[in-house]
Length: 356
Image 1: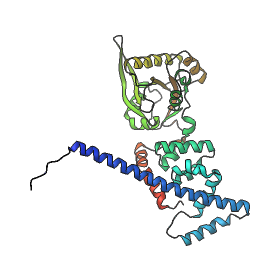
Image 2 (image 1 turned 90 degrees about the vertical axis):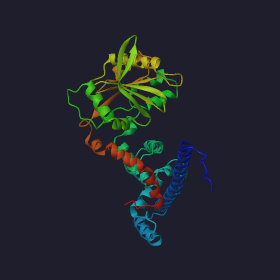
Image 3 (image 1 turned 180 degrees about the horizontal axis):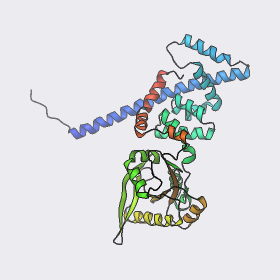
């Protein structure tokens, strides 16, 4: 029999195979999420019924222990009905009185994520915010706990900026949520006499850690990035492109307190990038000045005189962070490991792993 010739190239087959792999993974995630939502809805209903009996019929706290024993006896192969977990179910139902919340938010993250939020976040608005960020970024349980411990809710969007005045909506709102204050550079140890180049070198040497702290969407283009204006070369400390905002982001590093002239220098850099690098598909370039400290009033006055979008934030390095935050921040290797196990945790919920 004559040998058949291949009707497809290796490149075409590889593209086809990769497309199938992507679709299969997406289907697996959707299936795991569907099972996870049903489980969490069950937990919410159990918690609601316990709460109703205790409040309406004055059942005492001992009913939880009794339920745990009876449910374990009836369902020996299903783990998740411990006394601790039943108490979490009760607290979950008390925190979220309506079933609609479970369908829209609570059921979109694994059960143990919900338990962490019940333990660590008491404000309902903040809980919703952390759930949304977990869904958006695929945070594992440990990463969620780290973000709570580092008070990301308060830091994100906390920089002083002129975005609302100089950028159109919704770009201004998105840009504001891009910047934190302060930034936590726990991976750096700098001497008291360190200069801007020392800080820059440290951030570039730990670029993966730096990108993790900056947040999702940043693509690093280079340090001491050259721009030539009227035959004279200027260099940007750090240049990024933000893939969600579709804009260049210039970062200028200052080892001391913010001074008004810093905003003028940044205005020049942003204008130069806009004119030399930005195309019609890019949004306006954003400038971020990172300094040791700042006076809010001085920053606001300095930014009033510029039409370029600029934000001013502070940073803290190792030794300057509170001890509880230092201990809660993972290394980049730990972060990547946790990110890779996020889907596995959802699948664990399908198996109803013990929670105590």
